Length: 383
Ligand code: NAD
Image 1 (cartoon, rainbow, N blue to C red):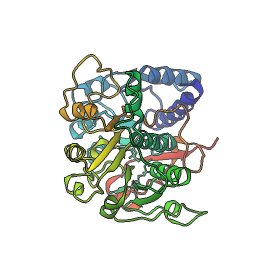
Image 2 (image 1 turned 45 degrees about the vertical axis):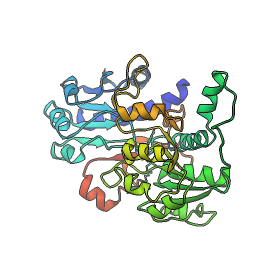
Image 3 (image 1 turned 120 degrees about the horizontal axis):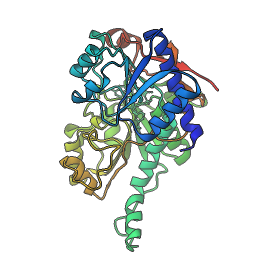
Image 4 (image 1 turned 45 degrees about the horizontal axis):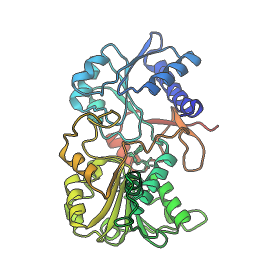
């Protein structure tokens, strides 16, 4: 990591927290319990906090936020959490009783926070709605390429002195049909790279049609939308980019195995819960699914971001996936690049107070009114 890249991310995040401090703790000190903290979190939060004289008091905890660890936030005004921290109803209630008024997510997905409970308990929830979309879109393409050309397996074989080509046959991407499921910031970037860079025939599915995907060039990419089942029945590859919501949970399931094109390859960089892992394993075993590349997986929370190389992986599905030759797993690192978040126009988009979320189309105004009466805020900070 270059200091510059990380610093920009952390400065923006800190700037946002500083503004939150002004409204939540105008006179006194502002204490933030930072869960799932890694050494680089501490280094950059401390440095930026000091450099910009923000005066936020951070308490760093390596522990994930769970019902048991809520007590660590006692006396804090805010908690700052990461992708696998859990803030279900009971946790939110306990946090609120402990005086916490803000849950600030260091990620885009908010599937592990009970928003209704937060609303009921007067806790504000904020997230990063455009978290490194280039990083994630590019990682999805990297996974797709690795899966198709068996890069990980070929590398492992070569290191063992096995230079046979058996089992390593790939296919040209040019002309292959790739389905993008969820065409927001990240899905749009993956779609563009696959269409423009690899001459794939890209098709899309989303509950909202993104004009930048659908409209003909030069305004859009000229990618057609289709029904999810028709997409699954006709695609050679799919890449998942929808958020995990009650409506998207297990969207790839046993029923849909029946309609998928035989030999389909699946890439998931969004959230593990989009795929029913039992169905995925069944599909892989039956050869309906030729391969899966997963940056996220159901049940990842106890494992990811920690070193388990000296112990057993007790989750039977994850243990099995790790042993399958046609499965690639990366540990939820798609976002992990040194650059700050850039939006689809190449401008830098970071945290801050100011504008209401506008681009996350599933957060349409109706739904915001109904489900998100919180302050979900984002500011465009162009540099
Ligand atoms: P986004 O809000 O820009 O796009 C999400 C898209 O999904 C929207 O177009 C929305 O309409 C669509 N969608 C919503 N409900 C849907 C449904 N039922 N069926 C199909 N599409 C649906 O979000 P984004 O920035 O592109 O991020 C997408 C997801 O990527 C995040 O929710 C997060 O879970 C994940 N993510 C992962 C990483 C990582 O490191 N692996 C990093 C950042 C984000």
